[in-house]
Length: 358
Image (spheres, one colour):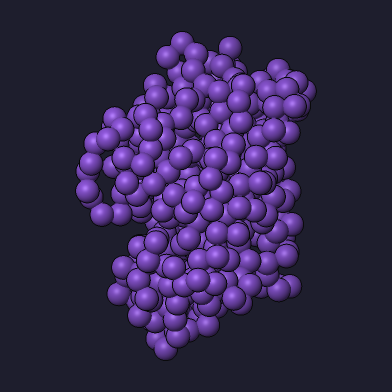
């Protein structure tokens, strides 16, 4: 049963978009895992992340940026950030898991993942309030605070930039800013439209932007008028530019070619006829389900930059399908959230459901 006055409870946490697009946060059920399942999911995410880092290293070593549709400017930024060892903060892997077989990677939201606040804070408070389960795989908050201390010099000042008019983006930025402050740094919010240029990136007070966390996709950054300056100013961006390899859905066929038949991967290709059975088509730079479609094997679409992946079975009960979003901080899986809907996991229709384990 939902908590009494749950809306006011979550609003007190700062979660005021709980009913975004009708129904977003729901408490009419929850997902329970046993310890072995949590270990299986955690191990799969850590293994997949190691494979992803290997893929970045291979792309940089071989210079095969064309496989990801990256132009010369983007490629140069990827290579520089990787070779200089720029550290990453976080990411979310979306996994298909039906409760029986191995978790399978659907995509890696490695650049601008949202629903972080819901997973780190809101569902933890749900567990404490309800005591329906004894524990939850959720170390997200503690690891974020620790990671800021690893990434930044002592007493660093960080700008947090994004689309502050979008409720989910603003909540994610405000939460990450809070974890950065808790780590002992100073930080301020800034809308992307308020970033200026004067022989370097500056904020509205003409303060130089030396360190910046951006909740703004790298492919959008590369399309901005200021993109020509990205390679010649010392501003350090988090997430680093090498995340362009991981947030790109062309990563999926790249991984499949490097690790064929790996139990945590689904067959993937830029050509749908390479894959037996039903396929899911995904734009290389698609965001939040935009442009995703189902198709039968053998259909040729011919659209440049599309990625095709074997269709995976999600956990299903009473017409509700669940997808796992496993959060990684640094290089380690630290928690997860559950998104569900009627079969299409998109921002406009999905619901966030809390979880715990026995």
